[in-house]
Length: 377
Image (cartoon, rainbow, N blue to C red; front, side, top):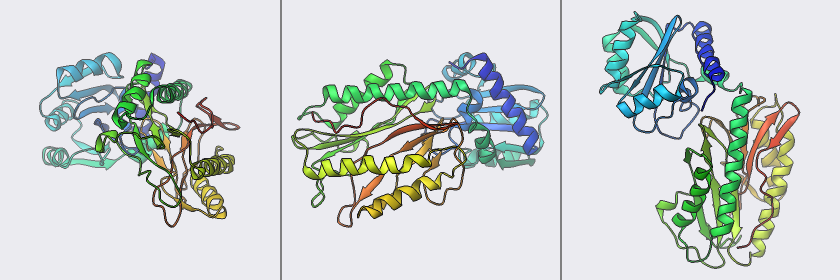
């Protein structure tokens, strides 16, 4: 649970943002999706988890914030765990927002919000009821504040790394031929949630890996096919727990029985590609430089560089893509998921391998203790 000191810091950020951007008020909207850096704005400002449907929170320069939920359950959750004490249950979220703004006298000026999350119907209702209020997207401005992680946030991210390790240990302990992908994912999710994880975004694929006739498909949700794992398969997984809102990810491939020579070769090449890119993990360096280094190493090795090759995570799983045209600088406290995507002209999918690194003053810190050996189960 967020400390009182951290709650005060988040409210201070809201005030700084309003002053810096000239907002009359801030409207944070949250839902239960996993997405881009807009999706973490609500949880960052409130500390409240959206379990079902939508929630909203309004922040004002000289008055306490107001939370608006769609149910009594969500209202109580927000009251007990968030930065907001004045929480209201309202069947019509948009109307609840309008009423709260009118109550505080905010009927004109600039309203900072996340346009990616504010529904078209809600935006239309706000414009109709408060025509002098300008809706302005605040996602990028707030994200610049969110990138400056506190010591408390960093410790939550580190804890998430341990949960991912536990998920991988459960995978190695339980996976056997004859299990379905869904059964494997259930064991991984149980391990991470037993340690306090509040959600898992776990992906899997299974099939025989070869360079000439690859049958290991693109990684996916287990419920898409729920394939039965066979002797000789490779099993790739993204083990991605969320702890107190913060994401980390451990990406691993294991061999069910004796691995093919191609799997051994590509595992080694993945490790070398990651090692080649690690010097780019330093504060001030552009995120795109990581992708540039990966491409250079992979193509020099005779393979094809592909996306996705990783992303920045925090209160969103994918806050920033690692892509060559991404010029945002790395900052101390950022968490970087690095998992190269390496294919060939004949092969559209490859194995998955990687982990999460924390950017530090001196470079980076690996968040997982799981080793780099190719495991055989």
